Image 1 (tube, one colour):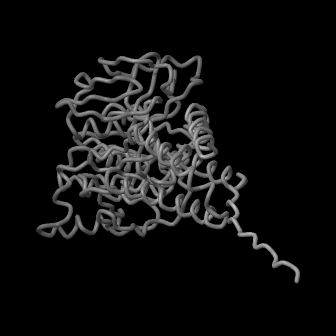
Image 2 (tube, rainbow, N blue to C red):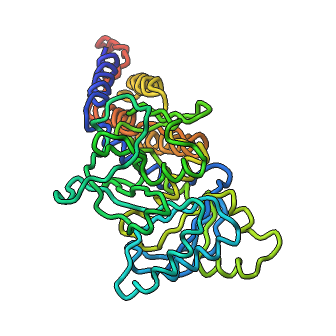
Length: 409
């Protein structure tokens, strides 16, 4: 009876945890921990990242650790001169690139204003150029609202998407005439959830990473169907799963699935013009230019998102049946828990936590499937605490024979 009672308590506690609204936030921390410590799986994607400014880096192959700039802080593109970007454009133009996306906001220092025309002359030669801009919820009331084209086929609730009413930062008008704009607003919580959709004055518009991918894949916005809080459907019935806020769950290590060059290395390879050069495939790849110090985003967050969209390896949650099976298995262990010694109980809890974490890592690394952390682990530890203080059943004393004393002489 005690075993059944303990099992019922465990199941009820698991149900209460599953209904708690804070459980989702706790599972988000568990998912972030999994993603940060799991290498990205898959083959190399058609993405080339070029670091402009800072120390040059060495080309990185898939799943190979990059020795990039050790700086963790990122600044704006103002630390890089227009001439450096012009040299970058001139070098890649030799290989006839199709799409070039520039991550940092292009705002130059006053002392570099005389180099703007050189940059502009090279930028207008790029067939498809995507530049960064930033939205705001508190625009200048005197400025007229900008018109931003949005998606046509949209269904579902839009209120949970990040909402904006104006543009805070954008390139100069000369650059806007020869390029498209991608919006780089990012949440402050975590780099593993990158927004794909924004709500701009009632219109659903793409964020920077999604805009870059659509341009590279040659998919017009009129052929994209969006079901908010569920998925984005592309031509060919290809679906991109999105979260309730229009974001995509991304493995930060996915950026290593693409190639990486420093500007100096790119200039050197372009100058040599060797046959079978590693730059020959630039024509079919999406080229992302970024600076090692961009305060708008954690390192490579846009590269990781674009690589995820190209590789089609989306992070998915395991079925809810797994949660039920895990709780049922833990409830079955109640009969063993109250009979085990307290030392064995503590060791069993440690082994259960380690084993569950290894299973979570294996599923994420191989199948990009994540399992919940709080409900199974919390239920298991709750069972352990209850069993630790639960009174142990007393063993029945063995019957002893009473021997009569011999008669007195």
